[in-house]
Image: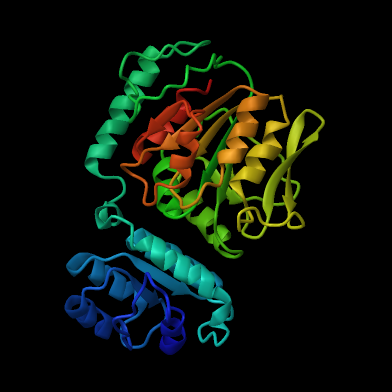
Length: 367
């Protein structure tokens, strides 16, 4: 396995393999002496496994880590634990613990290693839900309750400051009426979603649709984890689910998330026939574009951390067909400032917010 992964980088002008390690203990020693820019690490290893090693690495010699994980349910849970512990991303092995067909993931792994080399280590070490953030949430929610009357939004000055000056004129927005929240994210997304979804109150008067770039099998574990931590219900979307307020639906890996009208309600359509868009299925663009055709609700569209530009074309479709508030995660808190940057460059974004302020920013526009 070590030989196979090393061979992926032969002839790569951007990446040189400086060493390999037999297990977690060996890895910690070698990381301290070789000081690599990025580490790839298997979750399943003898003597000291990848999760235990990752904890130590992030404490004593922090470095961006890309994990390799099997696609079993246990593997999926471990991959999410790794991200929570500070791993940048993970790649699913194609066929179990010993995958001799690793060449199938060569392109993905090389790309993720190259991207990981650009990630700031300080963002990976940031603990979620720090006291400062909790205090900020209390202050913000107090402001929101006292200052936002029914009807049109009149937020107090600087109650929810944006992180950058946006040239876009503010959308005429009425808080009354049906709303839907759409969230798209990629690299760093599971941690960002935990920051946002756990702060959404149970009383939210809107359903939430989420596209997180992840392989099949991993989105279920993500939904289960978020559901346990959140006031709202979080589930992996299933064919025919009828949208309900206070429920977040995560697109399953391998399927685009779409909607169809069922009387006065909306049902979820999972599509694995439409090809991946920019390499992604589910794709944020596909979800945004599909929802843009429905005039029945105003939309709050959120684009968070991730590499690439998925969501940008979809945002254009949303903005051209209905009443939409677009929120992008700030460069300051993104693990990878790719997708939000591409969205901001369209000049269609209304608010730029740090990840720990996104929940409040969403709620500001809801009844």
